[in-house]
Length: 367
Image (tube, rainbow, N blue to C red; front, side, top):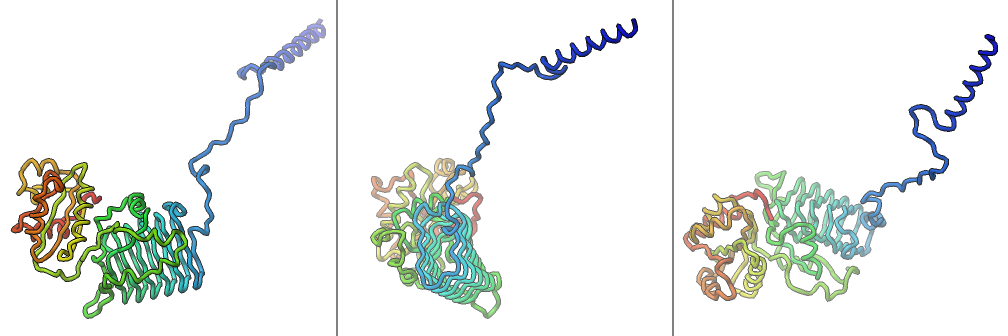
Protein backbone atom coordinates (compact mmCIF):
# COMPACT_ATOMS: atom_id res chain seq x y z
CA UNK A 1 0.00 0.00 0.00
CA UNK A 2 2.83 2.26 0.82
CA UNK A 3 4.28 1.66 -2.60
CA UNK A 4 0.92 2.22 -4.28
CA UNK A 5 0.52 5.51 -2.36
CA UNK A 6 3.98 6.58 -3.38
CA UNK A 7 3.25 5.83 -7.01
CA UNK A 8 0.04 7.86 -6.82
CA UNK A 9 1.96 10.80 -5.31
CA UNK A 10 4.53 10.58 -8.03
CA UNK A 11 1.83 10.57 -10.71
CA UNK A 12 0.20 13.64 -9.20
CA UNK A 13 3.57 15.43 -8.96
CA UNK A 14 4.32 14.80 -12.62
CA UNK A 15 0.85 16.02 -13.60
CA UNK A 16 1.13 19.31 -11.68
CA UNK A 17 4.73 19.84 -12.89
CA UNK A 18 3.59 19.56 -16.52
CA UNK A 19 0.64 21.85 -15.80
CA UNK A 20 2.93 24.48 -14.33
CA UNK A 21 5.08 24.40 -17.46
CA UNK A 22 2.07 25.10 -19.65
CA UNK A 23 0.76 27.93 -17.47
CA UNK A 24 4.00 29.49 -16.28
CA UNK A 25 5.66 29.24 -12.90
CA UNK A 26 4.12 30.84 -9.86
CA UNK A 27 4.82 34.57 -9.68
CA UNK A 28 5.70 34.81 -13.39
CA UNK A 29 3.60 36.45 -16.12
CA UNK A 30 1.08 34.16 -17.75
CA UNK A 31 2.29 32.95 -21.10
CA UNK A 32 -0.08 32.99 -24.03
CA UNK A 33 0.81 31.11 -27.17
CA UNK A 34 -1.38 33.55 -29.12
CA UNK A 35 0.42 36.70 -27.86
CA UNK A 36 2.65 38.20 -30.60
CA UNK A 37 6.35 38.58 -29.89
CA UNK A 38 7.37 42.07 -28.65
CA UNK A 39 8.87 44.30 -31.33
CA UNK A 40 12.48 45.34 -30.84
CA UNK A 41 12.65 49.01 -29.77
CA UNK A 42 14.28 51.56 -32.03
CA UNK A 43 17.45 53.01 -30.46
CA UNK A 44 16.81 56.44 -28.93
CA UNK A 45 18.12 59.37 -30.96
CA UNK A 46 19.68 62.50 -29.48
CA UNK A 47 20.18 65.95 -31.03
CA UNK A 48 23.85 65.28 -31.69
CA UNK A 49 22.93 62.08 -33.56
CA UNK A 50 20.83 63.98 -36.10
CA UNK A 51 23.22 66.94 -36.42
CA UNK A 52 24.81 67.24 -39.82
CA UNK A 53 28.30 65.76 -39.78
CA UNK A 54 30.85 68.16 -41.29
CA UNK A 55 34.35 67.56 -42.49
CA UNK A 56 36.77 68.31 -39.59
CA UNK A 57 39.05 69.97 -42.14
CA UNK A 58 36.57 72.85 -42.25
CA UNK A 59 37.50 73.73 -38.67
CA UNK A 60 41.21 72.88 -38.66
CA UNK A 61 43.52 74.85 -40.93
CA UNK A 62 47.04 73.61 -40.35
CA UNK A 63 50.51 73.65 -41.94
CA UNK A 64 49.56 75.75 -44.95
CA UNK A 65 52.08 77.86 -46.86
CA UNK A 66 51.37 80.52 -49.47
CA UNK A 67 47.74 79.55 -50.09
CA UNK A 68 44.30 81.12 -49.77
CA UNK A 69 41.70 79.47 -47.54
CA UNK A 70 38.06 80.64 -47.36
CA UNK A 71 34.99 79.58 -45.41
CA UNK A 72 31.58 80.84 -46.53
CA UNK A 73 28.50 81.71 -44.48
CA UNK A 74 26.96 78.68 -42.70
CA UNK A 75 30.04 76.50 -43.21
CA UNK A 76 31.35 77.12 -39.68
CA UNK A 77 28.04 78.08 -38.08
CA UNK A 78 29.28 78.69 -34.54
CA UNK A 79 31.85 75.89 -34.28
CA UNK A 80 35.36 76.29 -32.85
CA UNK A 81 38.14 76.82 -35.42
CA UNK A 82 41.86 76.07 -35.01
CA UNK A 83 44.55 77.61 -37.20
CA UNK A 84 48.13 76.45 -36.71
CA UNK A 85 51.55 76.59 -38.35
CA UNK A 86 50.51 78.61 -41.38
CA UNK A 87 52.91 80.87 -43.27
CA UNK A 88 52.12 83.63 -45.78
CA UNK A 89 48.47 82.63 -46.18
CA UNK A 90 45.27 84.58 -46.84
CA UNK A 91 42.53 83.15 -44.62
CA UNK A 92 38.92 84.35 -44.67
CA UNK A 93 36.38 82.95 -42.19
CA UNK A 94 33.26 84.74 -43.45
CA UNK A 95 30.93 83.18 -40.90
CA UNK A 96 29.87 83.29 -37.27
CA UNK A 97 32.47 81.40 -35.17
CA UNK A 98 32.22 79.88 -31.69
CA UNK A 99 35.87 80.27 -30.67
CA UNK A 100 39.20 80.62 -32.48
CA UNK A 101 42.75 79.55 -31.63
CA UNK A 102 45.63 80.73 -33.81
CA UNK A 103 49.02 79.15 -33.01
CA UNK A 104 52.51 79.43 -34.49
CA UNK A 105 51.52 81.40 -37.59
CA UNK A 106 53.66 83.92 -39.47
CA UNK A 107 53.05 86.60 -42.08
CA UNK A 108 49.38 85.69 -42.67
CA UNK A 109 46.38 87.86 -43.51
CA UNK A 110 43.35 86.75 -41.53
CA UNK A 111 39.70 87.82 -41.46
CA UNK A 112 37.40 86.33 -38.84
CA UNK A 113 33.64 86.90 -38.72
CA UNK A 114 31.90 87.50 -35.38
CA UNK A 115 33.25 85.20 -32.64
CA UNK A 116 30.72 84.57 -29.90
CA UNK A 117 33.37 83.85 -27.27
CA UNK A 118 37.14 84.34 -27.63
CA UNK A 119 40.02 84.53 -30.07
CA UNK A 120 43.44 83.56 -28.75
CA UNK A 121 46.66 84.12 -30.72
CA UNK A 122 49.81 82.40 -29.43
CA UNK A 123 53.36 82.60 -30.72
CA UNK A 124 52.41 84.46 -33.91
CA UNK A 125 54.34 87.16 -35.77
CA UNK A 126 53.78 89.66 -38.58
CA UNK A 127 50.06 88.91 -38.70
CA UNK A 128 47.46 91.24 -40.21
CA UNK A 129 44.08 90.47 -38.67
CA UNK A 130 40.56 91.90 -38.92
CA UNK A 131 38.30 90.27 -36.32
CA UNK A 132 35.15 90.80 -34.25
CA UNK A 133 34.88 88.95 -30.95
CA UNK A 134 33.59 88.90 -27.39
CA UNK A 135 37.08 88.42 -25.91
CA UNK A 136 40.53 88.95 -27.42
CA UNK A 137 43.89 87.74 -26.15
CA UNK A 138 47.44 87.34 -27.44
CA UNK A 139 50.45 85.65 -25.88
CA UNK A 140 54.05 85.61 -27.11
CA UNK A 141 53.18 87.51 -30.28
CA UNK A 142 55.08 90.27 -32.05
CA UNK A 143 54.66 92.81 -34.83
CA UNK A 144 50.96 92.21 -35.52
CA UNK A 145 48.32 94.66 -36.81
CA UNK A 146 44.62 94.43 -35.94
CA UNK A 147 41.37 95.96 -37.09
CA UNK A 148 39.45 94.99 -33.98
CA UNK A 149 35.96 94.77 -32.61
CA UNK A 150 35.98 93.54 -29.01
CA UNK A 151 33.08 93.67 -26.57
CA UNK A 152 35.46 93.49 -23.59
CA UNK A 153 38.94 94.87 -22.87
CA UNK A 154 41.44 93.25 -25.28
CA UNK A 155 44.34 91.55 -23.50
CA UNK A 156 47.96 91.20 -24.60
CA UNK A 157 50.47 89.09 -22.68
CA UNK A 158 54.24 88.91 -23.33
CA UNK A 159 53.56 90.46 -26.72
CA UNK A 160 55.34 93.38 -28.44
CA UNK A 161 54.87 95.55 -31.51
CA UNK A 162 51.08 95.17 -31.45
CA UNK A 163 49.05 97.85 -33.28
CA UNK A 164 45.28 98.34 -33.03
CA UNK A 165 42.58 100.21 -34.94
CA UNK A 166 38.80 100.00 -35.08
CA UNK A 167 37.17 97.14 -36.99
CA UNK A 168 36.18 98.23 -40.49
CA UNK A 169 34.83 95.61 -42.87
CA UNK A 170 31.62 94.74 -44.68
CA UNK A 171 29.77 91.97 -46.48
CA UNK A 172 26.07 91.34 -46.86
CA UNK A 173 25.54 88.76 -44.09
CA UNK A 174 27.88 90.36 -41.53
CA UNK A 175 25.17 92.09 -39.46
CA UNK A 176 23.16 88.87 -39.24
CA UNK A 177 26.27 87.06 -38.01
CA UNK A 178 26.83 89.69 -35.30
CA UNK A 179 23.30 88.95 -34.12
CA UNK A 180 23.96 85.19 -34.10
CA UNK A 181 27.10 85.76 -32.02
CA UNK A 182 25.07 87.98 -29.64
CA UNK A 183 27.43 90.94 -30.13
CA UNK A 184 26.10 94.50 -30.14
CA UNK A 185 27.83 96.44 -32.91
CA UNK A 186 27.73 99.54 -30.67
CA UNK A 187 29.80 98.04 -27.83
CA UNK A 188 33.34 98.08 -29.17
CA UNK A 189 36.27 98.56 -26.77
CA UNK A 190 38.96 98.08 -29.41
CA UNK A 191 41.32 100.66 -27.86
CA UNK A 192 41.06 99.71 -24.17
CA UNK A 193 44.06 97.36 -24.28
CA UNK A 194 45.07 95.63 -21.06
CA UNK A 195 48.79 94.78 -21.10
CA UNK A 196 49.58 92.05 -18.58
CA UNK A 197 53.30 92.84 -18.82
CA UNK A 198 53.21 96.61 -18.74
CA UNK A 199 56.49 98.08 -17.47
CA UNK A 200 57.70 101.66 -17.02
CA UNK A 201 59.56 102.87 -20.09
CA UNK A 202 58.31 100.01 -22.31
CA UNK A 203 55.60 100.29 -24.96
CA UNK A 204 54.17 96.99 -26.18
CA UNK A 205 51.29 98.31 -28.26
CA UNK A 206 50.23 101.42 -30.18
CA UNK A 207 47.43 102.73 -32.38
CA UNK A 208 47.33 101.71 -36.03
CA UNK A 209 46.20 104.53 -38.38
CA UNK A 210 42.54 103.89 -39.21
CA UNK A 211 43.23 104.32 -42.93
CA UNK A 212 45.57 101.31 -42.78
CA UNK A 213 42.78 98.88 -41.85
CA UNK A 214 41.60 98.76 -45.47
CA UNK A 215 45.12 97.66 -46.47
CA UNK A 216 45.36 94.72 -44.07
CA UNK A 217 43.50 92.26 -46.31
CA UNK A 218 43.30 91.48 -50.02
CA UNK A 219 39.66 90.53 -50.56
CA UNK A 220 40.44 89.33 -54.09
CA UNK A 221 41.95 86.25 -52.38
CA UNK A 222 38.62 85.37 -50.75
CA UNK A 223 36.73 82.68 -52.66
CA UNK A 224 33.79 82.54 -50.23
CA UNK A 225 31.89 85.31 -52.00
CA UNK A 226 31.92 87.64 -54.96
CA UNK A 227 34.02 90.79 -54.89
CA UNK A 228 30.95 93.08 -55.02
CA UNK A 229 29.60 91.54 -51.79
CA UNK A 230 32.29 93.39 -49.86
CA UNK A 231 30.98 96.76 -51.02
CA UNK A 232 28.46 98.52 -48.80
CA UNK A 233 27.98 100.55 -45.65
CA UNK A 234 29.55 100.01 -42.27
CA UNK A 235 28.12 97.48 -39.85
CA UNK A 236 30.35 98.57 -36.94
CA UNK A 237 30.70 102.34 -36.29
CA UNK A 238 34.30 103.49 -36.73
CA UNK A 239 35.17 105.37 -33.54
CA UNK A 240 38.11 107.46 -32.40
CA UNK A 241 38.47 105.52 -29.18
CA UNK A 242 41.56 106.89 -27.44
CA UNK A 243 42.80 108.83 -30.47
CA UNK A 244 43.17 112.61 -29.99
CA UNK A 245 39.90 114.50 -30.36
CA UNK A 246 39.93 117.02 -33.22
CA UNK A 247 38.07 119.48 -30.98
CA UNK A 248 37.97 120.03 -27.23
CA UNK A 249 34.18 119.97 -27.00
CA UNK A 250 31.90 117.02 -27.54
CA UNK A 251 28.20 116.23 -27.26
CA UNK A 252 26.42 113.21 -25.83
CA UNK A 253 23.27 111.96 -27.55
CA UNK A 254 21.14 109.46 -25.61
CA UNK A 255 18.62 107.04 -27.12
CA UNK A 256 15.86 105.87 -24.80
CA UNK A 257 14.25 102.42 -24.74
CA UNK A 258 11.62 102.26 -27.46
CA UNK A 259 10.64 99.94 -30.27
CA UNK A 260 12.09 102.37 -32.82
CA UNK A 261 15.34 103.10 -30.94
CA UNK A 262 17.53 100.83 -33.10
CA UNK A 263 16.34 102.48 -36.29
CA UNK A 264 16.88 105.96 -34.84
CA UNK A 265 20.42 105.11 -33.66
CA UNK A 266 21.32 103.73 -37.09
CA UNK A 267 19.93 106.84 -38.77
CA UNK A 268 21.93 109.10 -36.46
CA UNK A 269 25.15 107.16 -37.13
CA UNK A 270 24.59 107.45 -40.88
CA UNK A 271 24.06 111.19 -40.53
CA UNK A 272 27.15 111.57 -38.34
CA UNK A 273 29.28 109.72 -40.91
CA UNK A 274 28.08 112.12 -43.61
CA UNK A 275 29.18 115.22 -41.65
CA UNK A 276 32.86 115.78 -42.40
CA UNK A 277 33.22 118.26 -39.56
CA UNK A 278 31.97 115.70 -37.02
CA UNK A 279 34.00 112.88 -35.47
CA UNK A 280 32.44 109.83 -33.83
CA UNK A 281 34.19 109.32 -30.48
CA UNK A 282 32.51 106.29 -28.90
CA UNK A 283 29.24 104.38 -28.75
CA UNK A 284 27.71 102.10 -26.16
CA UNK A 285 24.51 100.32 -25.17
CA UNK A 286 24.00 99.65 -21.47
CA UNK A 287 21.20 98.51 -19.19
CA UNK A 288 20.88 101.17 -16.49
CA UNK A 289 19.58 100.72 -12.96
CA UNK A 290 17.36 103.38 -11.37
CA UNK A 291 20.27 105.23 -9.75
CA UNK A 292 22.21 105.54 -13.00
CA UNK A 293 19.10 106.54 -14.91
CA UNK A 294 18.55 109.37 -12.47
CA UNK A 295 22.18 110.54 -12.81
CA UNK A 296 22.02 110.55 -16.62
CA UNK A 297 18.43 111.41 -17.43
CA UNK A 298 17.17 113.67 -14.62
CA UNK A 299 17.35 116.80 -16.85
CA UNK A 300 14.57 115.24 -18.95
CA UNK A 301 12.08 114.63 -16.14
CA UNK A 302 11.01 111.94 -13.69
CA UNK A 303 8.84 110.13 -16.24
CA UNK A 304 11.83 109.59 -18.56
CA UNK A 305 13.94 108.33 -15.65
CA UNK A 306 11.23 105.92 -14.50
CA UNK A 307 10.56 104.56 -17.99
CA UNK A 308 14.25 103.86 -18.72
CA UNK A 309 15.15 102.16 -15.40
CA UNK A 310 16.24 98.56 -15.90
CA UNK A 311 16.18 98.88 -19.68
CA UNK A 312 18.71 99.27 -22.47
CA UNK A 313 19.90 102.83 -23.11
CA UNK A 314 22.29 103.74 -25.94
CA UNK A 315 24.58 106.75 -26.11
CA UNK A 316 26.87 108.27 -28.74
CA UNK A 317 29.62 110.80 -28.11
CA UNK A 318 30.37 113.08 -31.07
CA UNK A 319 32.79 115.99 -31.35
CA UNK A 320 33.07 118.92 -33.74
CA UNK A 321 33.69 122.70 -33.79
CA UNK A 322 30.03 123.58 -33.10
CA UNK A 323 28.79 120.14 -32.21
CA UNK A 324 26.22 120.99 -29.51
CA UNK A 325 24.50 123.61 -31.66
CA UNK A 326 24.66 121.32 -34.71
CA UNK A 327 22.93 118.44 -32.94
CA UNK A 328 20.35 120.69 -31.26
CA UNK A 329 19.43 122.01 -34.68
CA UNK A 330 19.25 118.49 -36.13
CA UNK A 331 17.01 117.18 -33.36
CA UNK A 332 14.61 120.10 -33.72
CA UNK A 333 13.12 118.14 -36.64
CA UNK A 334 11.00 115.98 -34.37
CA UNK A 335 9.38 114.13 -37.27
CA UNK A 336 12.74 112.51 -38.03
CA UNK A 337 14.10 112.50 -34.48
CA UNK A 338 11.24 111.69 -32.05
CA UNK A 339 11.71 113.30 -28.64
CA UNK A 340 10.47 110.19 -26.86
CA UNK A 341 13.53 108.36 -28.21
CA UNK A 342 16.46 110.77 -28.60
CA UNK A 343 17.82 113.35 -26.14
CA UNK A 344 20.80 115.71 -26.17
CA UNK A 345 22.50 115.90 -22.78
CA UNK A 346 22.87 119.56 -21.65
CA UNK A 347 26.30 120.95 -22.46
CA UNK A 348 27.06 121.67 -18.78
CA UNK A 349 26.47 117.99 -17.90
CA UNK A 350 28.23 116.41 -20.88
CA UNK A 351 31.73 115.84 -19.46
CA UNK A 352 30.48 114.05 -16.33
CA UNK A 353 27.87 112.07 -18.27
CA UNK A 354 30.46 110.88 -20.82
CA UNK A 355 32.88 109.77 -18.10
CA UNK A 356 30.13 107.93 -16.23
CA UNK A 357 28.54 106.21 -19.22
CA UNK A 358 31.72 105.12 -20.99
CA UNK A 359 34.22 104.69 -18.15
CA UNK A 360 32.83 104.56 -14.63
CA UNK A 361 29.71 102.48 -15.13
CA UNK A 362 30.61 98.84 -15.54
CA UNK A 363 28.03 96.67 -17.19
CA UNK A 364 25.64 94.82 -14.93
CA UNK A 365 24.17 93.34 -18.09
CA UNK A 366 25.71 94.55 -21.35
CA UNK A 367 23.81 94.27 -24.59
